[in-house]
Length: 438
Image 1 (cartoon, rainbow, N blue to C red):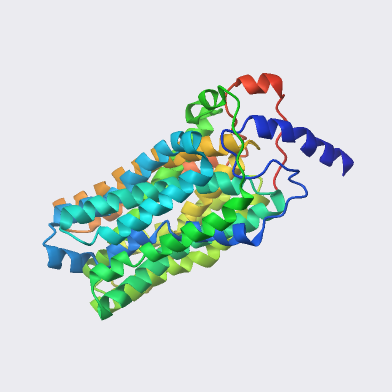
Image 2 (cartoon, rainbow, N blue to C red):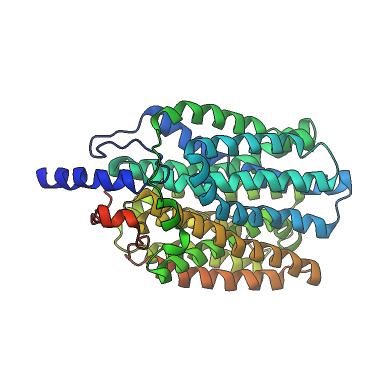
């Protein structure tokens, strides 16, 4: 025990001096316990990451009828969030270096709330512009959250990660469930814009929790020496990036097009489509709560990546071969595989070494480039459907995406530690070997 404490105390100077903008105070992590404000704020921030997307997807038909949005523009609106996540994820590292974690997160929440409130106040192009700015803000939040969680003490890490991943999935389900109810009693404009209130609640919670996230300036040159391109081994970082991209591409394709698949391919009555879609989004939440604990207990996460992809493969095969046989089974299968995105996000923290900057750089790479891959996937599925007017070819493409997801997930799940490249500060403070979480 004394030896372990000595190792952690020896690691503290390095942790302080390598930081560009540390999200947690520089204290002895073995004694630090996360305050209630942090335990509430982080899931609330994660809850803001999906309703802006799923809320619009559930009322897309109403939007098209009301403002005359074309099918091509609707495909762009469905795919645009993912491209925005790519651009925002790539820019987050620079924003964090320039403004720090506290101000970057607070600013992103303000942009998110304003964008959601005003994107419904005009024509289709105003809606597209508001969706783009909202999703850029979401990208910044989503990229910084793994780095914030990574800085938590080992005992609190699994709990905080589980809440974060579960809240991410819950946001999808809540956005899909609540928005149609609001729309039915008022209008699609109010249903889609009401999520600005959630962004406001997140901003208030972060302001309170931010008192427990003091930041200290980095030494000159640290920001230039640490970044996504300095990560080693590059093969593991790229495998995780591609895995996240394929997983997210599949997820966003399902989020955007599952209602249409159920309606047109599986012949589900229109009044049941919304409920099946909600079930698909909600089923992954309890599994998402357990994924970080399962991932932490496994030396390799390769098997878990395969297990989470299997229900999706069965569901896609069912929709392709026997779509009308048991549509609810296919919806359940898609829901059970949704936590695969949570596993990819959890793996960022598991693969990164103990330096928070490494986790931030890895998260920026994985989500920046990964979401670009996801955007190409989601757009490709939509355009393939528009070109063929059937769902067979898009489903075949999604099955190929799942095969790639499994392959890259098995590589990224191998127990390899990703570290940043050589930095000036490492010459002053030798690297302390990373201790396994738990």
